[in-house]
Image (cartoon, rainbow, N blue to C red; front, side, top):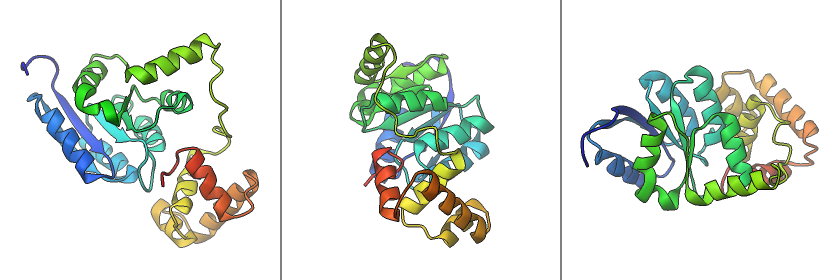
Amino acid sequence: MPEKGKTARIVIADDHEMVRRGLVATLADVGRWSVVAQADNGRDAVELVATHKPDVAILDLSMPELNGLDATRRILAARPETCVLILTAHESEQLVREVLAAGARGYVLKSDAGRILVRAVEALLDGQTFFTSKVARLVLEGYLRGGAGEAQETVQILSAREREIVQLLAEGASNKDVARALGISVKTAETHRSNIMRKMQFASLSDLVKYAVRNKIIEI
């Protein structure tokens, strides 16, 4: 591949090691780019971006501890100059809308990554957006329908902190685990949990887990 275009520092976050290896191998063909750090969960991804200040962060949508959507929000709140590219197996107009609302600039299906990942990163470095063709079609169809996408189940009801807690609880964390992960007291974690259960009208933790799965906060 010709050595022209912009240089780039890249952080990759995906909880599957083989996927990360594949991404690194694909990006290695562009000698002017370097993968400066890798993470296997969203919380580490946020910290690595803060540390390494990359030009591009490639994030899996479904990651433990902090999903790609909430990681995107936190990354861009702290470092808006980093371009975020979401990598996912899901084709969903609702998810595309949420990804755009979070500030990500690209949305690539994992099945297409080997073929178009380099083009996607180049587009982001040039200040453009990039979507897998199937996803771009979903966005266009939604626009032609007048913006009426899939019904979004209480997307905006939970705060960013509450979504983090929902993910941790759905992954099996105890109140003590939540408190430790977020640097809050156990009492505060318990209060957040009670507020979430009441706000969302969850009758049990099982309801919370189902909600997290339906809304792609976690993946099973």
